[in-house]
Structure formats: C-alpha cells, structure tokens
Image (cartoon, protein in one colour):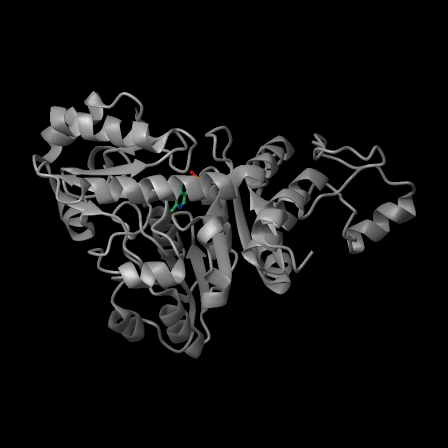
Length: 391
Ligand SMILES: *Cc1c(COP(=O)(O)O)cnc(C)c1O
C-alpha cells in the first residue's frame, strides 16, 4: 500500500471489511463494543490492539478507516479524527501546551483559530503573532523553548502563501513543533510533511466531504504525537467524530482528487479571465504570475488552489451588487463544496474583527472570497463575468 499513488489510496487505504466482505465501507453506528470475557475487557483497557475498540469517543471502526486513509494520503504515521475542523485545531494545539509555554502563530488566520489562540493566552500560554510571509519576523519570534508554531499555509481569505519549509527550519532549530492548518491547500495539493510540518490539520467539512453535508476534522502526525499527546486530550474532552460522518468523509475522499483538480483548473481559468477587469481592483490567486508568492505556491502546491479572492473597486456596495447578481454561485460561507460559494468576509466570517485588524489583514470592503465548485467551468466564468457587469 505504501507504493500506491494518492488517487489509489483515496479509494482503498484504510479499508476494513467485516465478516460479510462488504464492497462499500460499513457504518459501525455503535458507541460501545462487547468483550468475550471480563479478562478481555481488562486487557483491552490496558492496551487496545489495532482492531480492538472500547468506546466511540476513543475510536470506532468506521472512524478508524477514515483516520488511516487520511494518514496514508498525508504521509504521516497516524491520524485522529474530530467532530469538526475547530475540534482538530483546538486538540492539536491545546493537547501540546501548558501554562508558561510559548507559541508563535501567523496573524492571517481563520477567525475561530484566532479564538483558540486567545483561549490559550487566557490559560497562561504566551502567544506571539507574526506576519506569516515575513521570515525575519518568524526568526525574531521563535526562541529557545518555543513549544509550537501554528500557521495556515494559505491564508483565509487573502490567500497569502507561507514558506512552510523555511518556517519549519526556523522552528525545528529551536525544537518547536510545526502545526499547519492546511485547509486551503487541500490534501490533494499538500506536501506539508515533506516540507517539514510535524502536525497537519484539516477541516474535513471542506474539500474532504466536498458536498457540504457534514462537519468533521482530522489531525495527522507521528504515532507518538497522535496516540500519546493528542488522543488522551481528545478522548477525554469529547471532540470525537461521529461514525456516520466518518463514513461520509470516506465516501467524499473517493472523489476528492477529481473534484479538487477540477475546482483548481476552473479557479485558474477564472482568475486568468478576470485579471485586469475594470470593476476589480485586485484578483488574488496564487496561480497567477502577479501573486506575490506565485513561485512559492507552485513549489509547495503545484497549483493555485480552489479558492480565489476578488477586490471590487466599488467597495462594499459593488461587492453586494455582484453577490446578488450571481445565479449559479451561492452566497454562503463554506468552501471546497461541489457547489460554487461566494462570501463577503468583512461582513460575515471576519465581521468580529476591528476596522484596523481587517485593514491589516487586507480584508477590504470590496473583498469577496470565491470557492469554485465542480459546475461546468465555462458556465461559472459566464456567471461571474455577467454579475461583475451588473455590479
Ligand atoms: C473551516 C476552517 C476551519 C474550521 O473547520 P470547521 O469544520 O468549520 O470547524 C479551520 N481552519 C480553516 C482554515 C478553515 O477554513
């Protein structure tokens, strides 16, 4: 199995069959497991073997299939699935640190990730924020004894690309664990482990489900980290993924490679079509040559990703007119869905930030985030360009 390419692993890795030899993965919708004897129960609580389960908050066969498939494609020894992407981010960070520890994070983060870092600070963890694209700031902030660095390899919503290999080198020189929220990169384009990430976190709600059905998350890392650091925290604090949702994620993974490559191809075509459009102050897409980290994006991902950001010259009013004129693209706030979705971050996902914080992050009144779906690419280009004319 180790020799299989990603597309093969996405369909087959981690599969566990019951005595019935079912073709499609079974949903083990059970929270508990029966022991043959009291002695067996005792032995399992001392150490559960790979096919032995105790309680679904600790693990479940359907959830384990999803974890094993994710670890196989991400290239980590192990993985632990969670109820949502935020349970994964919270688990990855909180399980590792204690009061007095130091964490360095990039500033351009998903709002809920910022909340988790504020929470750590409340419990006595020192958190330093840096401009993730400025390696000098990382060098200055990471010090001897820094426990972890946390970053989104491609930031939301302004699509800044962070040089993961360089940050990992800085962090590792000081013994810090590198935790990467890799949602915008997607597992398909991820090379995070090869570039030096120790822990890779995904919201499975996004491209992994890919059809906007279920919440889920996953933390990928070494066996020692996943089983000795992360699992005790997650299994006792209750962020377990439902077996049904794990099954949805397994099914989503079967088509993820096809979807994500198609979505990225459409995003690239749309970005190229829109570049220089008179209604747009900026087209932000890592796949465009004028993106500040274009070469880095190509090295790290080999593609521009499935999301692009547009900054309407006419500000919020023009952005709202544009959103309201779209027919195929839905106004919502998920991303990575089979359906194209557009978001106005300043008034929704990033509403909570002050005007200064928004300005510092480049979240202007005219900025919209567009997540491309798998609809026909030409239909999407036509919908977007027609709505821009109407804006
Ligand atoms: C969506 C998202 C999350 C949170 O995931 P949920 O499944 O909604 O909890 C975390 N990080 C990033 C970058 C995201 O886009």
